[in-house]
Length: 113
Ligand code: AMP
Ligand code: ZN
Image 1 (tube, rainbow, N blue to C red):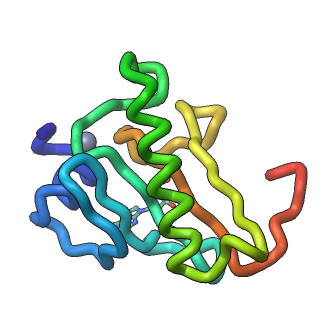
Image 2: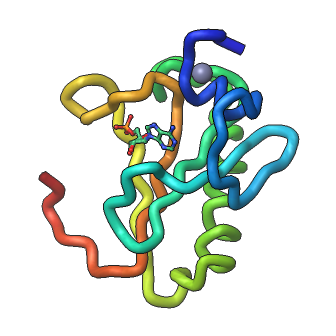
């Protein structure tokens, strides 16, 4: 764990969050500043700064499998949803602990801002 990392601290339960899913490898919790009726962040409990720091890409597949399960549980699988991973500054990344956004419950415009 990186003691100064916000999402490591959330994963360690040092900072409270609204958890919707947890297993030994991942934590999913509600975004504190939701951009859609459903806005959930899915993080590996292990710290990676960005997508560029991943070497075991099967981890991302496991994360997306969990995202599908959460989308079904949240009732947005049929209507549709968007998953987003912002990477570095131009991608809009603000928290440097790898995470997916799961967004749904409304129509998502394209292109993104
Ligand atoms: P990104 O801009 O892709 O790095 O996304 C970071 C996300 O983390 C933003 O959508 C924030 O609203 C969210 N966020 C920041 N702090 C917290 C927190 N304490 N609990 C839940 N979500 C948070
Ligand atoms: Zn971290």
